Image (cartoon, rainbow, N blue to C red):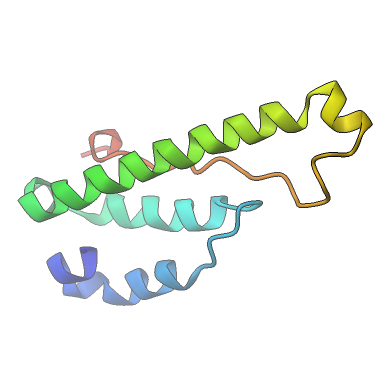
Length: 105
C-alpha cells in the first residue's frame, strides 16, 4: 500500500517486505514498518485505502499479540513445564506496530 501511495519509498518498502516474519523475533520487521509509517505525510495517512489497510493490520496485530499472550501464559504453567508439554519451539515475541495515530506528525 505504501509503495502505491509513495513510489519514492518503494526501495524501503521492498527492504521491509523482505524481512522475515519469525515468531521469535518480530522486532526487526515491526521496526522497519514503523520507520515507513513515520515517512508518510497527512495526505497519505488520510487516504481511504490506507485507512482500510491500516485497520486490517491493526486487527491482525491484536489477534497475533493475544495469541502470543495466551501461548506464553500456557507455557509458563507448572504442569506444562514439569511434563514438558510445551515442546522445544522458541517462545513467540509480541509484534509492536505503531498505529497511524501514534506517528509524530
